[in-house]
Length: 123
Image 1 (cartoon, rainbow, N blue to C red):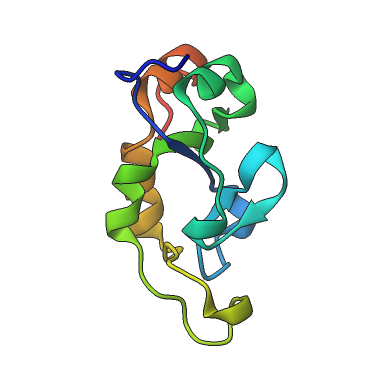
Image 2 (cartoon, rainbow, N blue to C red):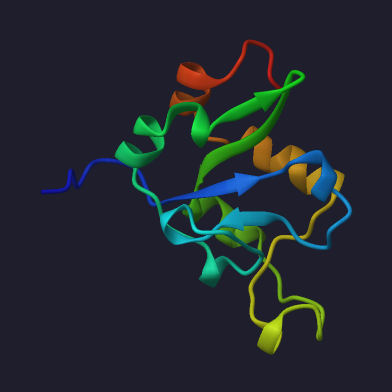
């Protein structure tokens, strides 16, 4: 039985530094199975899953928030269509991978997970 008052669904946003030059932000697919740019290919995770996943889903490295849960409802309004030819079938929507967008996503990370698993002072 699910709790109708629990927030969600969540996406797992992955902002590892080596991916900063990629055109779109990477999100986890369903069941922790690989990565996707299009939001329609990204997995939905419950609050219970992201909290039980601990630092697997909420990772801070060198004081920087790298991987974290974020409410899908906060991400969708920022999405755009991909540039033609970048994704199979031009599937979208996607989130543009810019410094400004990464900062915005980090600000919207799920606070209870950050409090429980993130290091103090994560950006």
